[in-house]
Each structure stands twice: as structure tokens, then as C-alpha cells.
Length: 155
Image (cartoon, rainbow, N blue to C red; front, side, top):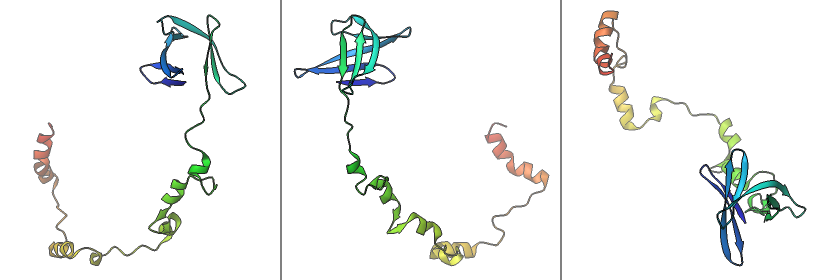
């Protein structure tokens, strides 16, 4: 048996003798009900976990719906093979081309100089005048220079 909840609906699926039945779970005015296969709503009076770790829903007519406990879909022995307390994939993500995260963080960075760029970038930067990225305006010139932008933005 499975219980499914999402934002639009909730239901229980019960499989008996190879046939799966779906029973809707209805919450209305603070009352939780199950919809029987015949379409009638039965109020859920009590919900508890029994000694066999099964979820038990006791309905208003004293009938019970029992949901077997799930076993999960993966054991720790599968996802933490070294029993280190850290998921193996998380441990693997600490390795960056054979280096650990700490080794990468502690390395001495290379100087970021013009020589570290490609030949093309180097020649383009070399040909640019020193102040090519600077433009100086007086206040009046700045207004005129930015006017097209101001108008384009609806100002």
C-alpha cells in the first residue's frame, strides 16, 4: 500500500490479490476521510503506528486500513561503502582532478598578468590607449551623453 500526497490530491493505493485499488483521502472542514471504492466517504477517527510498524487508519465504522511500513529504497551500505558517515558521491566531489578541496583552496595562485592572456587578447590590449576605457564629462556633457539612454528608458 502506498499513500500519495501532492498539492492537488491525496490517496491511498491498496493492492489485494494483484488488483490495485485507489482510495482518495479527503480533508474537508478539518475532517479527514477516505473514499471507499463504492464512493462513500468514511471519516478517519484515529491514526496510529502498530507494533509491527504499520500505519493504521481507524475509520468511523471501526474498520481499519493498514499500511505496511516502507523499507526505504537504499541501504547505508550502498551509499556509504566506507562507513565514514559521508555519502560516497559527496566524498568524490571533494576530489578535483586528483586534488582535494583543501589543496585547491590552499594553492598559491598564478599572477594574473597580461602575459597570461591569449596572443589575440594581448595584442588587442596592447593596442588600446591607456585611458581608452575612461571618458570624462562635465555635468552638462554627461546629461547630453546619457540623454538617449534616459529617453530609451522612458525618462
